Length: 71
Image (cartoon, rainbow, N blue to C red; front, side, top):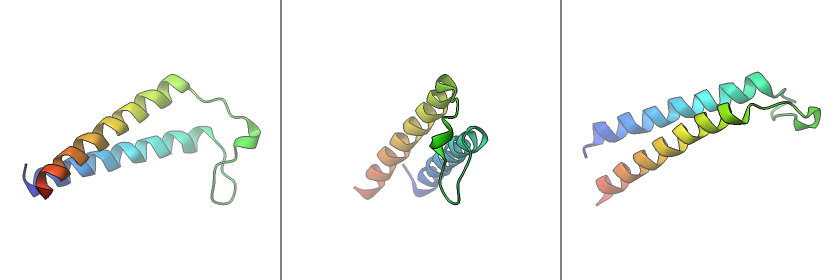
């Protein structure tokens, strides 16, 4: 695993992370700096899980490659 491949994996994780935040921004109103859950927004759990699962997988993949680079 070379450094450029690791950077690519990390960038992919950050893109999915942004997708996750965009999803939350669309569904949950924000207070000043944080989400306002007091309005009890309806959250599409399936959609959230799909995005989160992609993010979790990609982070693990990038981490594994990063650990190989550190060896």
